[in-house]
Image 1 (cartoon, rainbow, N blue to C red):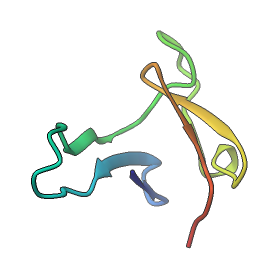
Image 2: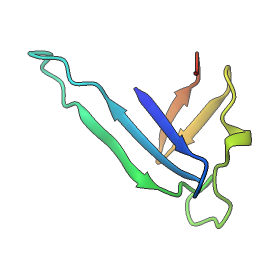
Image 3: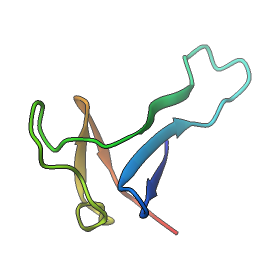
Length: 69
């Protein structure tokens, strides 16, 4: 998965690169939007929450950051 964080407005975009003949659905996982830390909460994820080695819950799916650039 590739996670893009846009500093200018705090939105997040998540996509999985498409691999031919993988048999699994791939592509856009999360369109560019603000992501709440918990469902129904007005507290959004910021760049301070996205550190290497941390687990983050985006819409019920847990992601672990292993590298960044």
